[in-house]
Amino acid sequence: MEYKTQVDRKNYNFEKYTDRSRWMSYWHQVREIVSRPEITSVLEIGPGNGFLRQILQVYRPDIKYHTLDIATDLNPDVVGSVTKMPLEDNSYDAVCAFQVLEHIQYDDFEPAVAEMKRVAKQYVFISLPHFGPSVELWLKIPFLKRIKFATKIFFPKEHVFGGQHYWEIGKKGYSVQKIRSVLVKYLTLI
Image (cartoon, rainbow, N blue to C red; front, side, top):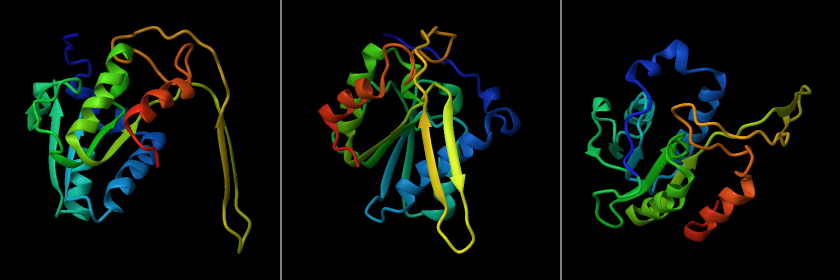
């Protein structure tokens, strides 16, 4: 399928785009890359607001960082689709797609994962939205470690394409198990 730009560049302004949950997502994403000294090159698919580039310049300036996107207004290093990247096999130590793959039809999810695996030497990092109400419990008692518990409540809502997300984990027909079954065909989950 031929995809067109879905998210206008103006959508990435700080107040509108960066809420608390997105900050937590950023932290997990960045930690996975920054904490692995063996990573010296990264391809980010769908760079969005450019946050990862900025953080890597501060904490890991040694990493060769490039972007791939179909949105030319984001000035990616490589213009192309995640389902057919114009790159050699094993081009980057890590290939990442953070909050990106839900922007392609689910039929293209597996080819995208296979393509990311092909281009990555060592790691593929993916984050996806998980729909549904959550239950979270955080307990902090002085002098003891913080106890954290979080889970999603199953809420079988039908997904309706609204111009951006073709699907989301947790919506009817897109269970965690279904997504995981695709990932484990190509990747070792850590």
